[in-house]
Every structure is written in C-alpha cells, then in structure tokens.
Image (cartoon, rainbow, N blue to C red; front, side, top):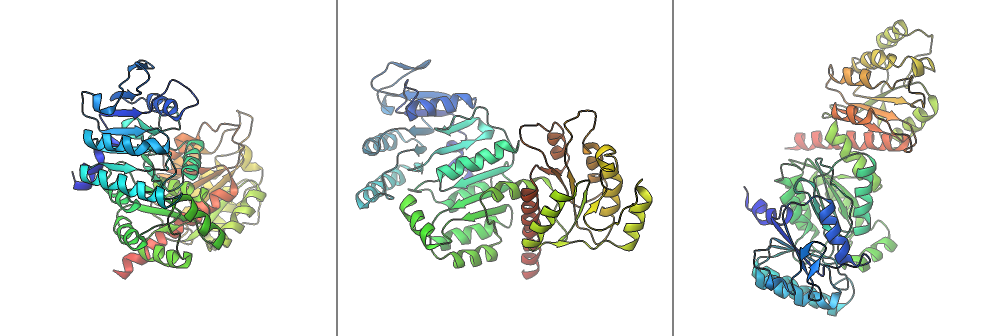
Length: 467
C-alpha cells in the first residue's frame, strides 16, 4: 500500500466514527449525519458525542471525544462555527485520524474566520489529522458503506466513478445525476475550504484507489493551481480526470471567491492547462457524470466518426446537430454498406447517416442488431448510437438483446439512446450497461456524452503521440 493510501485509508474506510454534536432532533445536522451513517449500512463502531444526553438513538453518548475509551479513525463535527475550534483541539489530542467539518463561517467569510481555519489546520497538521472541510457537506465511500455527510441517501450504490467537489450543492447535484442514471460510485468528497487537504491530495489518493476508474472534479477556485495541474497531469496518465470549472465570467469569478475563499483565476489559463494535462473539460456540470459513464462503460474510442441507426427521425436529428456543435464528425457510409443495409431490411429507404429504418424497426427491433452489425463493420464508422423510443406496450421489446450481441463482435463503442420519460422504467437498461452499452434517455445528453467520450480518447491519443 502506498503512503497516500495509508494516510487516507482510515478516513475513507474507518473502523470507528464519532459524531460530535449528535442529536435526537431531526432538524439538526447531528441527527442527519447519524442517520446517513446508519442508512448506508456502516459496520464499524459509532460513538455519538453529546454532553446533554446519555444515549442518542440506540448508542451510548459521551460528553467529549476524550471520554471515548477506544481509538477513533474519523470524527464528524456537527457543531456551530464558534464551537468547532475547541472540538478540533480535543480531536487532535485524541489523535483522531480524520475530521469532517460541516460548519461554514471561516476563510470564506472574513479574516477572523480565516485565522481560525489556519489555527485548526496547524493543530491538525501537528497531530497528523486530515480535515475534510470546513464548509462541506461531507464525504462518502460506497465500498465501506460510509456516509459521513448530512445527506442520508440510504445504501450507497457501488461503481467506479469518484467525485471531488468544492461545492456541496453541486456535489449533491452530481450524486443525484448518478442515482438517477442507476450508476454507482466509489467515493464522494466535498472538499469545502480545504483547510489541510487539497484537491491535489485527493487526486493522488484516487489515482491509487483500486475502486476508482474515472474522477470527476467540480472546481470553483484554487489557491495553488500550478500544484493541482502538476498532480492532475500525473493522475490523468492512469485514470480519466474530468473537470468542470466555475468562473468563466467576472460575475461567477467573484461569486466563487465569496463561496470558498479561493481565487477562481483566469479561465483561459485553466482551459489551456487542462488540455496540456490531459484533463477532459466539460461545458455543463451534467456532462461530468454523463461523460464519466461513457468512459467507464465503453471501450477506448479508436476514431471520431459516428453513425446512428433509428426508427424515429426527430431525436436523431437533435443528436446529429449537437454532435456537430461539439465538433464530432458524422460517418459517410460506404456504398457497400448502403447496399448491404438495403438487402438486409424489409423496407426500401434512402440509406444515409442517420440510418432511419422507419416504423418497421419499432416493431421488428431485431433490425437494430442486423443493421448495427453492418454499420460497425464499415471502416468509416468508429462509434454507433442506436436511437429508440421505447413502447409502453410490453409485447414490443427493446432491441436490448440485439445491441448486447453486437458488442460481443466489435471493439467499437455502442451507445443506446432510449428516449423515454424517467417515470417509465427501462428494465433492460442495467443489463445493457453490464454488457458494455452506455444508455441515455435524452437526445441532447446522449450526444454530449458521446462527444465528450470521443474528445477524451482523442486527447489521450494526441498526448501519447507527444511523448
């Protein structure tokens, strides 16, 4: 185990958690944080700290963390700002390995708050204690059933995407995207003010984390952008790093500073540095999760030309327009491919890209497998998007089996745009994604995810050539 893993392992996989400020009042963060930990199924020891209660829930409560007879790996401090410093001093004396501090009102507020934060960092540095926060929603590790936040979301679904966010609000938004997409995740870290743990530290940890394959980073501002980019360049050689950077305008730049107390910096400089480091930058926050999903599920993209097969024109036209806007080239099908398609289908169409099989394919979904295979065998096609609007009649099946079959005979990516409202479940979605087909339920999002996925692998190829 590397040194960075040793440093952070007790925090992300703690054997014991103390909740300082644990409460029996459902309106308190100390109640919500205990609930989050329990709902996640945490199997370690739990120690509520509350001087005014003998028990909290089914657990014995202690007046101070110093009264706990056992070692504590992680302490969640759910107290008002003015009480935090004393709690930090007690945790340092106890040699707690890591802290999560929810409270705001530190360097993002004023110089007095900044001074208090610096004092906390100094105390914890001397004790060897890591701080997540302050001014954070907390952190989670799905692989240790550990939700050290005040956001109870039940059992944590496991996957290989990790999120590092400076914004609690955007962090929970990104987690919502993951849950809505039936994706799992590995780690979530709301870094907040970064008292003594920087984003660069967490990137190095995630680089060595075997359960993380793709890292999504939401950045407001950095105090040491050079260090971050140097680390990110190293990490990006082994793991996909995807970033969304706030501060593209003067207004958002100032707002970012007031939120976390960090300088947002010049956006054009960040953009150039991202490209140089091999970090995929996305335009919208929702694209972080969608791109991460594509990179996680699909094989490496060997080229940049996309073909579509569909039974409905409207969503396909939207997808082609968005792809073009993102600089992605549509495949020009060979004459041989066109002849093979016409010979294979029971309807006479003008074969072009997108290949519109008309309503015939709505009923005879096996045509998606037949035509998809032909398209993937065309050397002008590097990726296939299958566009289908699921029927609300169960007797008309989705082309799931067909799409899974063609992934077994190609090393090219297959993406499914199953355009359907979220109120209607698509039972086949999980099976498709387990078998290497990335599924999206919105035409714009499938196009942006495909574009970012292709852009990522193009950037990787270019960086390899520059070595």
